Image (cartoon, rainbow, N blue to C red; front, side, top):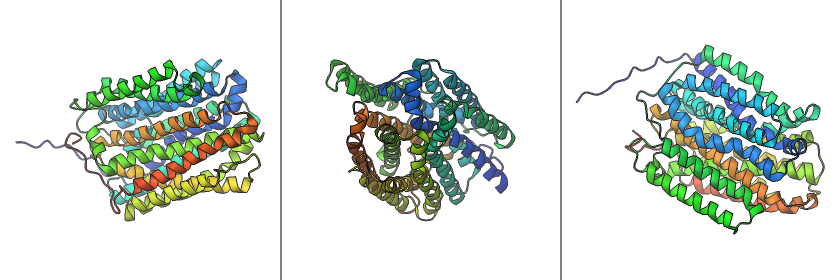
Length: 471
């Protein structure tokens, strides 16, 4: 038997490695910012396009649903055709879709353009992480880099409302999308100059049946959550949606378990650490997006604040995420993922409990303290989750490894928007504070779930061995 060998790419200099990280972080800042910058602008978009809460939920979830559905396939495409190439294609699609969003004359066109944005973003998120992983072969340096990457991503997610509020203070809601154009241009130039091309040694086949079924499961499940308050949870349409989602999920499991090269190797989920990382990713982003959406509607509708003022209140969340994410990365490199996950769960739970008795007159000091705690929890959570998932697959499958947790994050974002929207859709502005309380209980449950996930993480290392099929 003759072993197949592949040329080992030359080790990049330290300056080049960290430059590659900076370029990838800039692209991730763009993706994360666009995930949440629209939150604070939803009331303005609603007034500008004459659309209600249900339509506003679709404006947000059209992006996150398509992004979540396409991430794994985009990671596989990058491993096959070249990560830098797919990365640059994604930038081009994302930039063009952003221009369409800015020019959208109706809510239907805006939702469609947001879905196209999601396709472009799906070529950026897992591919950027794969480029970083391949550029930094040393595990300790890689853990630190992932901590920085998570910090930038967390900062972008948390800074979205502040940035959106600042833009809306002097411009209209279309500026939320115009801002992407110059950033896309800069990242395209930098990626061409500094990012090396890389791909997996062995090309994997695309799993089109799995891709279609995964998209169907996510779209139907989240769609039922968004439309449920309007059509009735026990209406024939809702019951048909439940059945459709369950059938698609069963078909997805059946198809994936029989394919030689599946979209997702489901046997990986039998390992507690890996499945825990995926559950943790969903949980963290449910908590974050419930927090951001409830903040937007509570402050702008119930208290009559401007978008800028509502965004500024979330600054402690952004600061907490930015400070704690690199700290978390260093902790993962030294002691493993368990301790930062415990801190993440504790901070998110404490922050949510501060607001379970929310009233129309809750002090700004308490709001800021609660958001700071949630931001700290968000910052501590991302690095251990990402590091555990990336270490769970071989380096050659880095694109798919990053895509799995990125899919889980975006699924959590879509679920968070749908669940929070369902709580406040029918509420009168005067009743929004009381209607939001169930949402803060949900955020607290997410924090407790992270504490349970920490029990599945190893005290040191946190690596997950891939299944034979993944190898």
